[in-house]
Length: 493
Ligand code: ASP
Ligand code: MG
Image: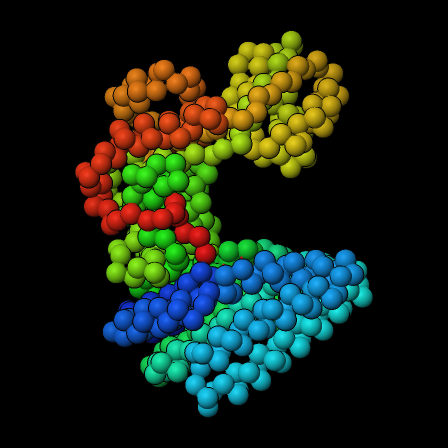
């Protein structure tokens, strides 16, 4: 008990030491923000513009590299060693080319030696995979992490060349996780302590620490990863451990948008939203930053910004704990390829049967998006029909009940998302009136008050989204003072 309290006190002392340096800014640059020399040049400019605060830089692998590593690993495990090595050589040439153009002569030799050493390790891993004939999750984590090892060294040297006193920090020595390969979770106390011990002395010396995102290791030093897209998670972990004043996610779009601009060209950036609203958007199918990855920032109430490294002057989207809602609807999402399943039972529906049905869908890894019941019928929405024949067959054997299972394909789920929108009858009636001719059926998608959902034929998605967007975001009328247009829906790298 006293040990626990001592630990707690030590934590508080550490915390208070960090509270004073209130201006640590964690800046995460996604793959497209470091993809080539021009992109890394922009990163240098952005980091330099933060010289009033203490930046900590987290980088993803160069765009496409993680996928290529995956391809190489799969090829090696299948015995196609030649093509695996060729893929990896391509990655090496790309990094060397960038080192050549971004790094000064004096540092080039040392960087080149480091990169060569790591590429040799990577090649020998591919040989092992070919010999083993399989790619297990543990080797896969080792393999995929190389992208961030390379990019973080490269970006560190490029920053130094530009006159910024940057220092490389090996994230695998600081972010300590469990051994759930492919989707590891940080062991918080150890990680917090290691980050504070490693990164804070650099900050105190006025240096800019540069870490690879996504990569970590177990307490025994076995490489792990935080799951695909995990660099955002790294940024949130680092931000929380260092009590940062903000976490910035630099990407290639202007922020999180009111709808998919591919569906509706009037889509605009949402200036502010709450973590809860972001969670609802993700649940409704928008490809926003996943709140699970922001949880450490959320716990400590650190604001997160989604910003465009190609247009750094934009305001982006701010995600915070609470937002005073001006306009009730913040966004309109669309999820395609939905199938509507109807299960009819002559014997009626009770909770035992419901559970049995749910369990069958679960066993077939077929996630249920929505479920409603009536006297003798269960209606479900699912994202794929692949497992439905097998599920139907299995249901026939459940609980000695005779089921009739039917489904309809090519549906889409369009959701209006916003705080408390279900509690506003006048809003609902306006919406229903405007879509009454569209054969859109209302779905009670979940228990939250933050979404109203419609099921429509996929062919009608565009029209429905445009109509709804026109109602809630009429042209030129600012909503939560928006920042500008973007070329894509949300963050993409
Ligand atoms: N490079 C990793 C990926 O592509 C991690 C990340 O970019 O966040 O998934
Ligand atoms: Mg990403």
